[in-house]
Every structure is written in structure tokens, then in C-alpha cells.
Amino acid sequence: AATGVAAVYLNYKGTSTNSIRGSFNVSSVTENNAGDYTTNFTNSMNDANYAVTCSQGGNALNNEVRTPYNGTTFNTGNFRVATLDVGVAIQDSTYVCEAVHGDLA
Image (cartoon, rainbow, N blue to C red):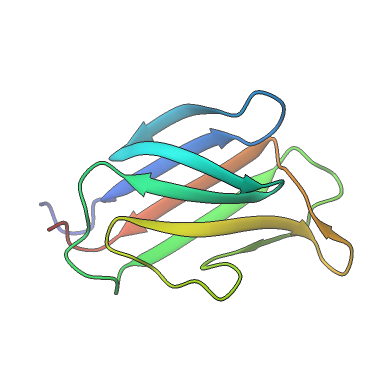
């Protein structure tokens, strides 16, 4: 794998009919609950010590992204992320974008 190149990227629609707009090395996204998603990798990471950068948008109420979310940890095959309005609720976001850097297995 090339150094510095994202091992995973995702542009995901997390509202209505959830769908992957664009991705690399993502087999699927599981919606656990509203605004609570698990990104599943096609090819696993070498270990769980990778770095994740996330952003969300398109929902004026949301102002935070959390990963790993809700007491979970990064796994070699997936990680969990949540989009939320701090102090109010976890909510779906129109755009959930992610990039993962680290070594593939």
C-alpha cells in the first residue's frame, strides 16, 4: 500500500434511503440507529491503531461527529460513528464523510 494514501474513504447519505455515494474499501454501512452508523471494510486493516477523520453536514441541527462511538473501539474490520446535536439527540445527517489512514492487512 502507498504511504499517505487513504486506506478507506466514504461519502454516505445517512437520511431517508441511506446509500453510499462514493467509497473505497467499504463493503457496506450498517445503520444501528438514527445517526449511528458502522462502516464495514472490504479489506481489513492490519490492526486497530488506524486514524479516522470524519465530517458531517446537510443537517442544520447537527454539530458533532463522534468516533469511535458509544464505548466502542476501532476494529480491524469496521468502526462506529455517530452524528449528533450536542445535548439534544443523535440524528441522521445528509452527508457523512470519512477517511481512514493506516496499514491494510
